[in-house]
Amino acid sequence: MGRFYITTPIYYVNDEPHLGHAYTTIMADVFARYHRVAGDDVLFLTGTDEHGQKVAQAAKERGVHPQDHCDEMVERFRRLWATLNISYDDFIRTTESRHRRVVQQILQRLYEAGEIYPDDYEGWYCVPDERFWTEKDLLDGKCPECGREVTRISEKNYFFRMGKYREWLTDHIRDDSRFVLPPARRNEMLGFLRRPLNDLCISRPKARLAWGIPLPFDESYVCYVWFDALINYITAAGYLQDADAFGRWWPASCHLIGKDILTTHCIYWPTMLKAMGVETPDSVMAHGWWLVDDEKMSKSLGNAIRPLDLADKYGVDAFRYFLVREMVLGMDSSFGETGFVHRYNSELANDLGNLLNRTVVMAKRYLGGRVPAADTNHPDLAELKVQARRTLDGVTDALDKMNPAGILDAIWDLVRQANRFAEAQAPWNLARDPDGKDTLKATIYGLLETMRYLAVLLFPVLPEKAEEIWAQIGADGEVKTRTMRDLHSWGGLRAGADVNAGSPIFPRIEPVEKDLSEKADMADGKEDLVPFKEFQKLEFRVARVESADRVPGADRLLTLQVSLGDEQRQIVAGVAKQYQPESLVGRQIVVVANLEPATIRGVASEGMLLAASADGRVALLQPDADVPDGAEVG
Ligand code: MSP
Figure 1 (tube, helix red, strand yellow):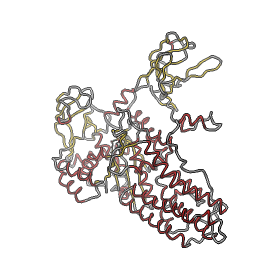
Figure 2 (cartoon, rainbow, N blue to C red; figure 1 turned 90 degrees about the vertical axis):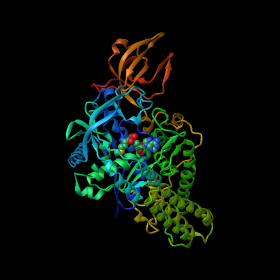
Figure 3 (cartoon, helix red, strand yellow; figure 1 turned 30 degrees about the horizontal axis):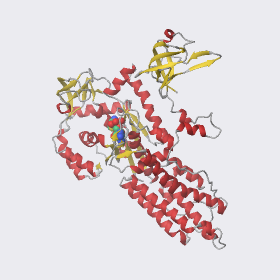
């Protein structure tokens, strides 16, 4: 049995998870699951990066301690990964004590070994942003982030002797062709190393930034966030805590990352490991960017795709499938819903969904809904069996090359072959032929058995649908416990087992989609029931009323200015008859924070206040203990 250790980047805890984060994590999940199916021992790690300026600032703006801020924010990632069926084995947060301890020990050792040394650092400082910039970072001599004036300052800092490893690293990247993948990125890194390599400043004075891991040899500094973050990969493997575990898991098989963080992973990280005397990971694989309308996704452009929107609309498995299928690893891809629907209909609904459907329906119609006792060596099955074997080899080979689209290609060869086989055998004719009984049984057995192969092989990409396939074809147990070993011999389905024709696993999508709310209304007789997934979309938050005024000419309405901690909102509320405006100021209330803005009597309203009402009386909902403004309710 092999061993496979795969990691994702640890995501900035402040960020709202979007399609890009979901992509890396789903890809890592798919690799991890394939290795489990291949029978390997797997460690799959993800987590969050929680130190640094941005977190400190966001927490300050909300008036909460940075740790509390992180504890709250991390849940967004955890929730999303649960919904997307991410099967991580460990979730690391850089604020955990297991990590802080390891980082401090590493710092101390490197310091004692002379790998870290103090020196004066000269640079340009942007006071409002509290950030240091080098000469070449500046834009027209000003701060590249906010465009304001910068001041030249010089301060003592600590440096890691990265520069001295330049030659070693160049050789390493050149000699080990799997270390940086794909090859274009390897060339990029070799190009980078042709220029001089500076030592790395790894400290920040506490006076400027206190939210970090303190340097053990100088308490007036904290560790630079990247130096701390990269170490997560060895903390989770047991470095300096559990020698057996570390011996088993390290070096990591693959750090899967986006191309934006190539330098930190291929230059900083291996030199840090070298200085520690620790082996480098087997490979760093950098994928490209998901673009939206050919632009980079970003908060400021307002074009970030929220993964849950799509997963809700089309199903988690279809979303996972699309991401794995669509992007050629290493290249950029543009995300578009039209392309998504097209692939869904042709590959999932037609090729795969129909194959399952016709198989189970025929088993029901012609064979009483049972797996037939058939001759599994019937000559008509020969080609299908060869293809099943080929597909298995193709999947193994593509997995070894870390080529997820290649895995799906190999699987689709079997899907298409099985569809052709069904057409050619024409079971509907065999059923009418008095001499066709044995061939009919063998044909349907062959199709059901093919579906068994497909369920095991597709489980890593379609974990929910593979279980459905498994149940429909009457296979024993659960697909999630199966491995490729179960596919080494043809004929694994038990004769006599019940075939349970269910509804289509991928119902066709009409290219023009009705909007979700209309769909919910159309659901027969269920107008009043809201699916949990819909309910989950609502964002209830605690807000503090900062001011309240009557709306002129509307005797029931008040305009409230409220604070959600990190933002201000204006909300129109129909409580003027029950509450004097001034009695509300300073109170905490509960609001629906993600309603579409509306204009009420000419006043913009960006949310809705929650209140109980009975017999004309109204009572505002409010938390029964003081909580930070903006706190989530749910
Ligand atoms: N915290 C650092 C990583 C530290 S790892 C020791 C970080 N975090 S991040 O939240 O910004 O995540 C960056 C990663 O998110 C990228 O490397 C990539 O995996 C993923 N993506 C973010 N936007 C993306 C796209 N538009 N497209 C594809 N993936 C991208 O950097």
